[in-house]
Length: 376
Ligand SMILES: Nc1ncnc2c1ncn2[C@@H]1O[C@H](COP(=O)(O)OP(=O)(O)OP(=O)(O)O)[C@@H](O)[C@H]1O
Ligand SMILES: [Mg+2]
Image 1 (cartoon, rainbow, N blue to C red):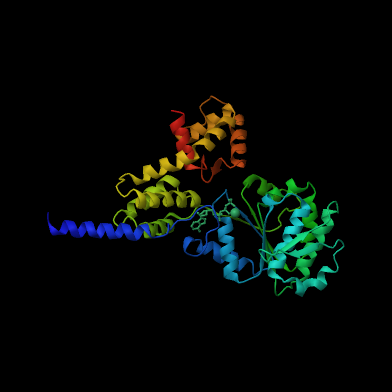
Image 2 (cartoon, rainbow, N blue to C red):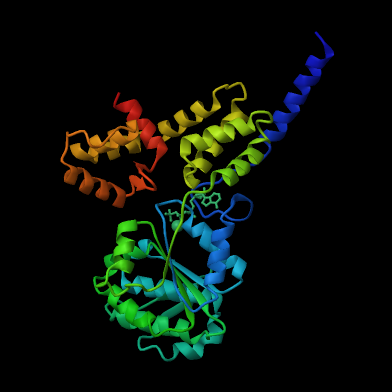
């Protein structure tokens, strides 16, 4: 056997050994920062610049396009104080007020603002969590939650100035009406007199967000600047993937990056998810030739039960629409009335199963794969 064989084999072995010890360079499911964050330079620059004005920003995109990540990056680059609350995780107006106050204490130690809390009409119970060291806040049950909210919002306003505005991010803002049907009016009344806060309001339900900010009757009509986030630009995402895949697939990284992006159409979350799986297979099954197909199969199989449960709960029209979209077939076939298709599409979009960029498509490429396999 020629010497070069041994050399090559040793090289392979040591490369595989090195890769095995390397951390998976892809991340999905949480906010991405630092080396996991790519591109969005224009958006970050725009947000940083925008929050230097006394205006408010409304950022809309379908789920998992990277809203939280881009806002986190812009805030950290701006070096400004911020409070972030996800309204989807709140159970009531009182809960929302308590959360705002807890977040406020993360940027203003209690000792420095105690004098401002004395003005609260309902005094909160504040204690230090012995384990985390953070502040726990609770209010007596049954009190008027809108008074709590007013007092907390006034505290945030009073602790800042026009020269030193704080940024308050309210994520999944379209859920305000789930907390209380009057919360939009109340919140708007409070916010419109504040001068020391930049609000950034995020939402992933396009139609609800545009209703809130674009309908004349809504209290939040034209409250701030609307901004929409697209998928990541292909060129930047390609470079990001190629560089990271090189550690595991030296010669094929560029082809694999292209195949991943073709499959996910540059959706930020699904691209990172697929790339992460491809990497994993490259490390654990280096003999696998068709690494993309293996990774897709792996993801579809992992989510198979969820997809099946989802599918069972769709009515017949929705199933038909999802199938047509999966097959990339026409929706206007005469099988269903146009108005029926349109309203079903709107509902599917609102629930996050379908997205519209320049055409309607299934949000999750792996669910699409599952539909194609299951409905053959
Ligand atoms: N700039 C980016 N660079 C690389 N990956 C990104 C970027 N932005 C988002 N992602 C990917 O998308 C995922 C979702 O990002 P993020 O949580 O910021 O989106 P979101 O729009 O806030 O989602 P949600 O609708 O669930 O709140 C991240 O975990 C990451 O995998
Ligand atoms: Mg988010």
